[in-house]
Image (cartoon, one colour):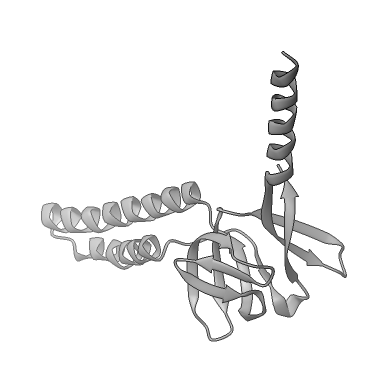
Length: 157
């Protein structure tokens, strides 16, 4: 019984010691705001050379993260924002559905009435479909030129 208790205490203490999760801490020294984005969350970044990369990130070291098998240094990131999967799915579906509905309504309206004014619904429908393909992210981004500082920290679970 005594060895079982010692074994369980050792097991849980090792689990607590190694169960720290890494995260990106985004701070603004002027406004004293802090934002945490934990590891394995979806983010969208823009790098110095203009590349837009989105996906789940993993922390490689204190100065590098990994997105889609690309190692990116924190110093290369110009803008970072959260990119939740559920919001991406909902906005993409919304824009695609209503864009297709607008184009379909313009075609059927012209076919049944012969009035060419119904084609005025097609350009906004095409724009909505394009917006659905581009998957807009309406969440706030944190730009380096607005004094946001990126660093990697360890967060206990």
